View 1: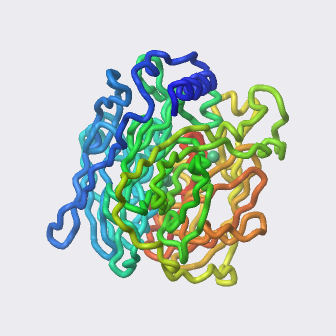
View 2: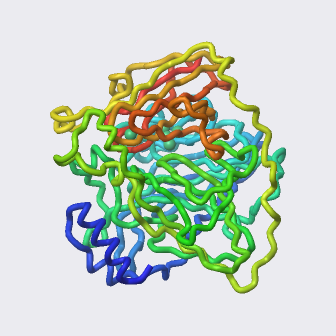
View 3: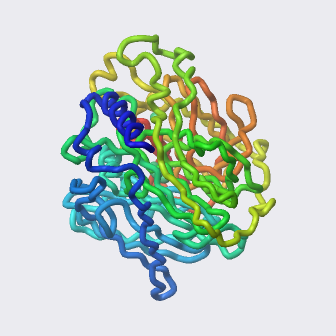
Length: 497
Ligand code: C2O
Ligand code: CU
Ligand code: CU
C-alpha cells in the first residue's frame, strides 16, 4: 500500500469512527514494513498420559505502531496467545491462570467437550485463580480457537487481546498439505482495532458500535499492523481465523488469483474448493492453499460487501442514522497481508484432489426441527442500550432455552429478521449446512461448521447432533458471533441430556 493509500484508508476509517484523522500514528507507520508475527507454537507437555498446557491471562502493552505502547491483554504474552497444537484422541489439560485482575473465562471454540470444560459464561475464572479443564480431543484435523467468553464482557476482553488459535492434528488424516508451522503453514488471525491518536485502542463502543458491532480503523493480523510475510515454498497454507469483534471480511487477492480452500471450521472438506473470493465472518475459520510458483507477490485484501442487504428493508427504512449501507459497514475495506515469494521456491506437493470422507448430511435422520429467529430491537429499544434477541428472548444466564437429547439428529432453522448479517455459532458440535433459503450451500460450505453466516431475510437450515456429553445442569451456548450482539443478548443456552 502506498503511503497515500494508507492515508486514505486511515482517514476514511477514522471518519467512519467519527474521530478525525490520526496523523501521529500514520507518520509513525510506514506501509508493510512489519514482518507478520507468528504466534509461538505451544505443543504442551505430556504429563501422566495427558497433554498439559499452562496459559496465563495477563495485561501488558503492545507496540503496534513504533513508539506507541498500547495497553493490551494476552495469553502468555501481551497480545493474543500461543497457537496450541493438539492431537485427536489425546486427553488435554489446560491450566488457565487469570492474571488480568478481573474475572474472565477461556472458551475452546469448535470443540466437542464436557459442558464443565467449555469455558463459556458459566466457567468464570476469578482474578488470581486458576481453572484447569480437561477434555479428550475428538476433532478431526482442523483449526480451532480459544477466547474469552465472560458474560457481557466478551467483546471487551477479545478486543483487548484474549484469544488464540488451536491446531488439531489427526494421524488418521495424513493428507499431503503444506504443514511446516510458520513456514508454509501459517496462522493468520484477522482482526481490526480502532486506534486513537495516542495509540490506545480503548474498548469504548458508542451507540452505533453497539448496534453495528465494534470495528477498527486498522486491520491487525496476528497482532501486526500492515504486515508482510516471506514465502519460501511453491505453495502455502494459510489458516485464516476471523477473530475480530464484528467485521466480516470479503477476502480476495488483489491480482485475482485463485486459491484452494481445503478446510472449513471443523476440518477438511471432501475435496478442495477453488475460489477467487471468500467471505469469512467472526468466529469462522478457513484453511486455504495459495500457489506462488509464478514468483509474484500477492496482496490479501478485504473488499466492500455487496450492497443490497439494506434494500431488503426489513424493519428499517433508508436514511436516518441507521440507513444507507450498514451492510457495507460490516465489511471494511482493508489491505490485510502481503505475501512475498523468494526468488527460489522449495517444491510443494499439489493439493490432493480428495481430502476427507464426509457423508452428505441426511436431513431425513432429523427427529425434530427447532427455530432460531435472530432479531434486533430497533428504535427506542435500541436507544435504551441495545436489544438483541433470539426468538424474542434475550440471553439470561438463569434460563435454559433448549434441552436436546444426546445423539438425536435435529434440524435447526436459523432466520434473520433484521438488516444485518449474523454469524450464528453453536457450542459442542460441528454441524452441516443443509440449505440457505432452500438452495444448497456452495462447495466450500459443505464441510464441518460451527459458525454460519445468516443474511438478512435468509433462512439457513443446519443439521446438528450432540454426540458426546450430557449434563443436565450446565448449559452450552448458541449465539451470534458479532461480540457486541452476543453481549447485547443475542445468545441462548441449551443442555444436552
Ligand atoms: Cu467463539 Cu460461544 O464462542
Ligand atoms: Cu464456541
Ligand atoms: Cu449479530
